[in-house]
Image (cartoon, rainbow, N blue to C red; front, side, top):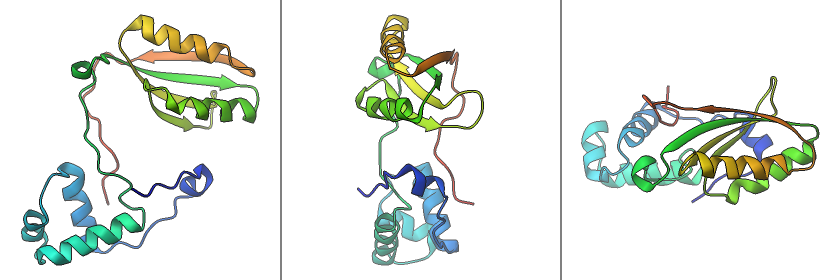
Amino acid sequence: MHEDTNPVRRARGDQAELDVIDRKLLGLLARNAEQSYNELSQQVYLSAPAVHERVKRLKSRGVIRATVALLDGPKVGRALLAFVHLETSTWETTRRVLEMSAFPEIEEIHTVAGDTAMILKVRAENSAALESLLGKLHHLEGFKGVKTFIALGTYLERGPLPI
């Protein structure tokens, strides 16, 4: 798996050159990554080996960063979904939060412009587990504040689709 871990380079939005077939393949894979190369080939009118080469190229160029299973939070014991808006006083504090990515409750970390420095997508077992994680954030040097938004329901959850 190739993933660019440099947040500055990833944030620049270096767009890959994609033709119509690449975009169609990406859309098909985004909807169902379990399709075989033969199934994909029938939908884009190429041979299965040609589709395999295109997918391999898209992976090597970092367009496809990973193939993952999208798990159901409640069914795996993480029923509480929250978005944590974290305010920090220094960039160093923000970097320390990035080190917390090892915590399994934290699914995503985004630096943002606006009233907060970061937004964390968190899935916790319950409110006590969320409170424990928030306590760890409160102990960070440079921590200024937090706003937590608990999701009541999820109607759409997906990654970007190709244009």
